[in-house]
Image (cartoon, rainbow, N blue to C red; front, side, top):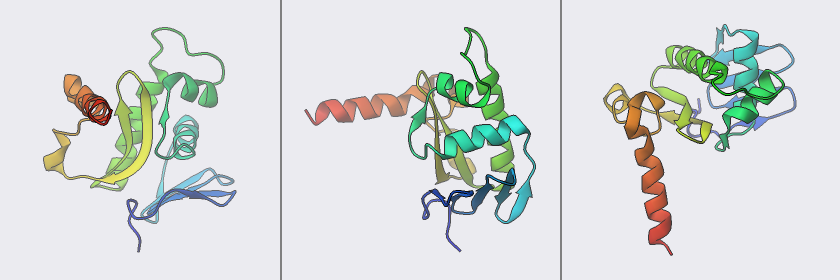
Length: 148
């Protein structure tokens, strides 16, 4: 069986797949490793919005507009709260995999990636890492500048 890292997300019109994660659009159903993952309507819509942007950073404003409709108001943390809930459910269903990555100041990226508990404290794009969440961004900027 392929792992989420080996298989990019694909969409056949009714199903989004990212390795062992399967999102059945018409049924409103998510399977994680073949097991049903119970999500709220908002969590499901958020997962679909992210999965359709595989590998790309989705801004909070874009996600809010897509999932809730309308404009994101200053101070509204709805997207962040639901990302946290969705991330927790995905990681509980598929331990050892991270699907949603935080890019502080930019947004969220859906990209299946294996990780271990020993890496969890050093996950540079996880908002829970606090100020360390900017280290990957700084490395990327530094690398980009070095290429000039």
